[in-house]
Image (cartoon, rainbow, N blue to C red):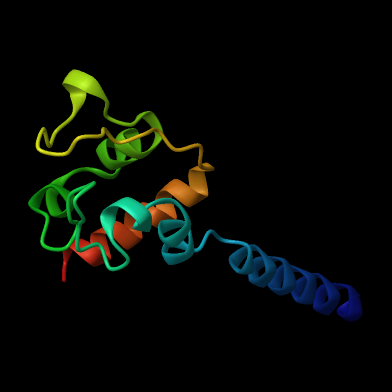
Length: 110
């Protein structure tokens, strides 16, 4: 009985650690999907606005940011008209959207 309890506890710990190991990496997703337009450090470029110091990024709800990431902003829906291209929608998993949203908030706080 004691071995069964210890084995169950060890398995639970191993599963929780492995789940954390597979969590999406916000900075990596950002680098792969966002940095080309928004800049490596979120400083913005001629193609897209900065995240650093962005009031929108500091105050928007996670769901609003997730909508922009997954649905994009094209045409009349564009928030920043001075940029020639719109925000293309991104095909990301839910955990990736959450991870990159958290990373964007970190960039906005700088």
